[in-house]
Length: 469
Image (cartoon, rainbow, N blue to C red):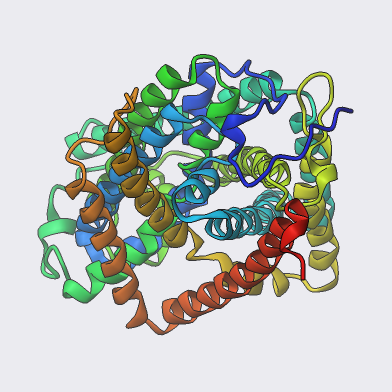
């Protein structure tokens, strides 16, 4: 393995990293879809409908607007300065090394916990179809398999994720086709429900504005993961062009898939139906398609595993970048001759393997507690993205720098994004469960920021012995 010289407080974008650049634009696009289209759509969308009724579509449009702004801001920075540290690197450039290290470690911590949850969650779904299979053993098998995939090299990983995500996209397109046929009355065994479920006795917004707000909190967390596109930019050919294309494509595809799917669900299934625990299966059940429950359970498992694959990639590159900037152990910046950061990959899957043991000893008890700490991490990451973009764009204008991609409407667009984020946080404080989650995440950020500040101070003293007293 090769260990590169430690970087100073500068961003990794100014130094050769040794990572490969063989990821193709189509793979980058599908990675963004693979990380964002997971359990949040296949399972969580039902919770949003139950909270807001058909008016959850408003929640999706608000959250979608925020995603477009955040991805535009992130794409602007990634196209100009591609880096495996992505928003962590940009936060360091804009706000200093403590901010960069804090957001980098926070995101890495979120992903390693989510990786474990996705492995256990996918195992649980498959075990529900074949009860004889132990959940912990399936989760262990998934962790071993995807660790191997991520050790093969970025091109092999990218190709695998491309086809993995294709399965989900094909499933959603088939679902939308069934929904259209059902609404049009083209299925002889299933009469069209018409608009009764949207404009019936309960109305469009049966839970009022409070329901829309609650639905918004459910929806916003489902869009987490799209930022992995920026992390992968450093290993993509022609990153300036590839990132711009991927950001634009991923945004509209996610919105079409999410909004289209939820529109079908709200049209076909009553908003207070218990069947919304598995919304896609509920729609297919209305269409009277045999084996729908099993099919959607397996597709949901595939969705979780695809997201696991993308999140493992993102986590390994983030901690590699932190190591390059001396914010993580130096050994984690070692790479193979094929450009694979093996120690970073292994560090990122370690908790996932431990989680299989925890699941065996404490089934369904440990991971929900851990997920509560990182459930609202995406709000902090997105807020840091928008702040960094505002600062770095202002510097680029001042210095006359030409940007290959620009977020339209600067600075008002970024300001609208920050206002939406602030509103979501305020709304969350009025929901007891979400308030606990926000408080837990805030406490976690405080601890990481304190540790990062101490580490940065020590790093600066080591780099400049004259400062030592």
